[in-house]
Length: 401
Image (cartoon, rainbow, N blue to C red; front, side, top):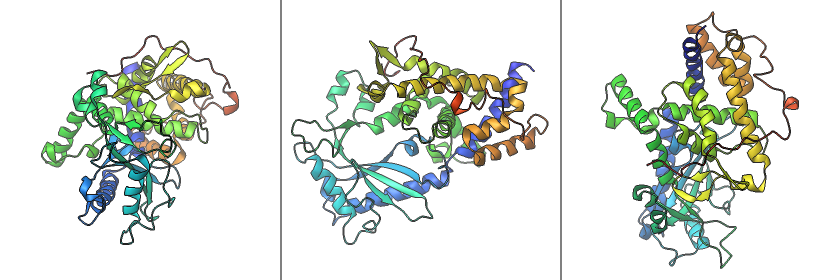
């Protein structure tokens, strides 16, 4: 079978798999209702926060459109920033955290019995909703940062101006410690810019499909090939490294995949071409690993790799496995065994649903009950404990304008 046909069938089953992993738009709308309601409560006229014009907005996978269905009985983890219009000279980290927490735990608050733990986490206040919703919302108190320093580093103003300072229990008692800095809204803008062409195309197609105007389509109503790739990688990561604290972290996966993405539209092309390019955006200088935050070049997402080298080793081992596995799936022999590969790599529930959908279209092309060859589902005992790491061929640029 020629490679074009092989790539087409791989694309089809990966598309089915990604749809099974996906969080439906209704869940995004429910999440938005949750954090909007929190924002309304925090900013009501009788609130001590009202004077500081609190606004709340999402960050993390729900903001990026890369969330996946939880495995088993896990909850949806929704992250949001609560931004107050204050300066570092007006408030301390501890006071900021308490200001938001006191309002959430107010005697008239619907959230007062939903805070867990009651004294808050290291940075956030976590609101746990009823079991039926399977949601918890992490609310991060923050204030605007002076972003001139980011402009000096060459970060475009439209990304830099949303930088924030946040609370951190580990630093707030140290008189010599700076406020922790972040820029989730800027990161989201950068991420969407990396897939702008495919996002606009997906929204136009969806609008035509339901006979609506394009501006009526929310970003979370559609998925781009880049978002699908990240969903596939994250679920594979979760299954492959279940219980391993050194597993690749989502922010590194998101960043490298977005940097390596070049408007590919076919999922087979993406996993076969984008995944290998992810290495090119990892820097290693004199043994120091660096994955730069594209909206803050001074932040290193791979800082823990330098503290614990096994994290880097696991990441490179994982990329190598992905490349070998998907190349094997292009072969007739490999694709015939894809049923067991998908179960082993993504979990039985989502794999079998994807297999069933594909089989309805092409029943003669897949053997859903076959036994996977070792190259597709390697036993843990067969994996080297100290894999050889491959250094990147060239340093990366922090972002692409």
